[in-house]
Amino acid sequence: MNETRHDLSEVRLMVIGSCSVAVLGLPHILLWLKSRLRLRRIRVVLTPMATRLVTTDSIRRVAGCEVYAGWDDLPADARSHVSLAEWSQVAIVLPATADLVGKMANGIADNLATSTIMALSCPVIVVPSTNATTWAKPAVRRNVRQLRADGFTVVEPVQGLAVAGDTSEPGSMGDYRPALLQALVRAAGGEPHDQQRIEAENMGDCHVRK
Image (cartoon, rainbow, N blue to C red):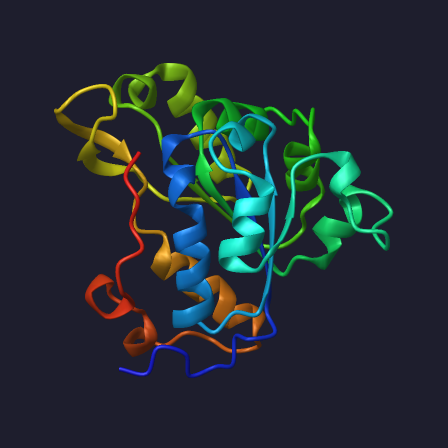
């Protein structure tokens, strides 16, 4: 199967990570994006809490991406978070905590990550990662419905091993790869055909449980 019939190397991807345990796997996911999809133009924005689990320096060193976590991290040529948003052709929020989902659904922009999300005009894919109890809460379900109504693509969580115990429960990051590939191909000027929709077994392992 030809994974990337269209050249994706120049597509500008914004990755926004929040403070779920799944963010520990973000450097690995970024390496996958670079090696499998040949993406060269990736920027990462972390929420302040996410930096308690991964550091901007670790992502820079491992994945070789530009990483921002606060206003002081903005590049010299960036006027504000709006510059980051305007740069982006595709954005993926991965992982998205219930807190971040709630802020996005209600238009709250209280840090660099949420402010950048509010300013985006490109396709945005949201990949929640939470525990089963939180995911089932009416407020969270309401926020997810609102995001979908607002045009966000929300990837349903899947069954996975809970961090708080040895049980398996829904809440781990779902397979975001088909939705991401479709958005990237469209940004590159093409339309994905059915045979180009990359199935999990052809994409390599880039799953990280919550």
